[in-house]
Image 1 (cartoon, helix red, strand yellow):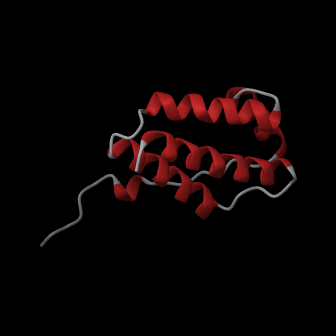
Image 2: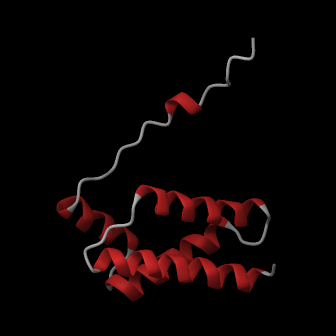
Length: 97
């Protein structure tokens, strides 16, 4: 897999989720986490840098919503409750006894 192919796929997935959200269908946590995992895999495999993904997300947000990610977050807080997931249970190593 090459870098551009990966970036095109991330952009397509981001646009699909963002467009659905704009139409009033917020993505499920599963869809969001799946996309985040896909993006993280690209970083892990050194196909892309975190900065490249941040820039892609910013461009996609501007295209779909006409505002920056930061502006969108502020807007979302006023219209939808923010999901708070407690991941602390995964921060400590498992008991291997």
